[in-house]
Every structure is written in structure tokens, then in C-alpha cells.
Amino acid sequence: MAEVLVYVDHADGAVRKPTLELLTLARRIGEPVAVALGAGAADTAAALAEHGAVKVLTHEAAEYADYLVVPKVDALQAAVTAVSPAAVLVPSSAEGKEIAARLALRIGAGIITDATDLEASEEGPVATQSVFAASFTTKTRVIKGTPVITVKPNSAAVEPAPAAGTVETLTVAFTGQATGTKVTARTPRESTGRPELTEAAIVVSGGRGVNGAENFPLIEALADSLGAAVGASRAAVDAGWYPHTNQVGQTGKSVSPQLYIANGISGAIQHRAGMQTSKTIVAVNKDAEAPIFDLVDYGVVGDLFDVVPQLTEEINTRKG
Image (cartoon, rainbow, N blue to C red; front, side):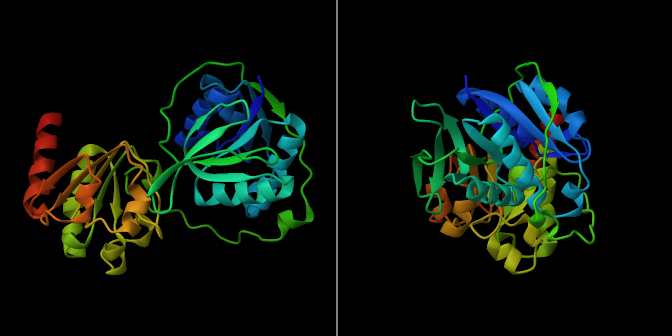
């Protein structure tokens, strides 16, 4: 069976959930070979092996932290040369998509971004995508070179499948471009105690109907009762009610959780493009004609200031 490279997203050896999802998808089309780079790369081996990696290629160097994405592209290119994989899978984060695009250009291959599923075929991996502001679902296949595919978080359930996880050191020769853009400072992101928006299994969002920053604690309380991330529509962000980093939509972040709850959001195409692939969608809106109701699995026609506190109270009661 052909090998499939999986780029490992980790923090000092702690593997992030989207990578474990990639390993599940990789097993559908071949044997997963993980590529872990930077500080703590070797520490990822146990988790990767537990989730199906037959081999773990590691390389630790200061360049991965000191400079932007080019050193990682150099390493993935070296891995492609060493393995000759059937495909390269990368988490579909902002950084992941830049790495994937640069790699595809380097190796002269086609690229598919924001895939939501993968399946095997005789001609190569076939990816499912949601395209044109989530108006259509397509089946796509790369026809030139080694397919480079970025996959949206929450596209597959994490499935343990113990494998050998043999650790090998990857030989990497950095190009002259690798040190072209240096990281001069880092500011730790302030922790809210909530899941990362793009990786969360549940997302609770607020829109124009929240009617002010002072009312967003209602949305946060519901999110906290569910252990969810908090999102916001472009209207709420543009009004200054919630940080831009929490914007869901075509010009914000794209999410695909198991459950998405939209509160006071009309359902404009810009917002739908960022959340339409959610597995289950619930909306609360007092306008029965709001476009969001054309999309949802469950809709509540009512004032969010009445509905959301009651929902939060009921959830907390059942938890207690």
C-alpha cells in the first residue's frame, strides 16, 4: 500500500487534534507517514503511532521557530523526495494552507484546499469540498504530480489504530529562502479556557441580534455550558462587539463543528460560507423569514434574550 505523508501540527510535542483526524483519513488512502518538525518533534511519536502512523519522520532545528514557513516547506519537500508518497495531507489552518501551496509549487503538483472528506480511487485520492460560498459540494482529484491536500478540522472522527510508529530522522537541507523572514517577537494569545474556534466540536455564535458587546456574555455563558468555542458574525465584529479573531465567515474563519448554534444571525451568504459544513446547525432568531432557517437542522423562532438564558439554564441543570 502506498504511503501518505501527514504534516504534524504540534506544540512542543503535544499533537493537536486536526493531525489525529488527518491520520484517520490517511488510512483510507494508504499507510500514514507522519512528519514532525521543530522542538519536541520526537515526543509526538507515541501519540502518532497510537493513531496509525507506521513511521514518524522527525527533524528538530531552531529554524522552524525562528523563521516563517519556508523551513517547514523545505522539510516537507525533503520528505516527499524520501518517501514518494501517494499524497501529502496538511491541516487546513492559515499556516497549513501556506505551507501546502508553497510545497505544491515546489514539487509541481496540484493542490486541493479545505477538503471535508477523502476517499481512495484507482486514479488517486478523491477529496470532497464545499465550494462557491458553500453553495455546492464537489468531488475533486489532483491530476498532476503528488496531490497536496489541506483538510478542514472536524472533517473526521479521531480513531485510534495502533501502528509501528518507527521513528526516523529526516535529512533536511534548508534553502537560502528559509532564513529570509525572521520572527522577531511573539505575544502569547490570551487564554479564555475555551477550545480553539476552528478545532472546536461545538461553536456558539452571536450576530447583529445580540445588539451590543455588553450582551455577548449571554453567548459566552451558553458556550461555556457546552464546553464550546465562541464565534461571531461579521456584523458583530465590524460593530466592535467581539474580536475579529472570533469571526466566522468568508472573510473570517471557516469552521466545521459537530454542532453550530447561531444566535441572532440572519444567515447572509458571507456567514454561511464559513459554517455551512457543520454537521448539525441550530439557529435562534426572532425573524421567521431569516435566511438562516433555510440551512438549519433545528430552528427556534424567538427572541434570543429569552431563549438563550433558558437554554443555558436547562443545560446546566441537566449537567448538575
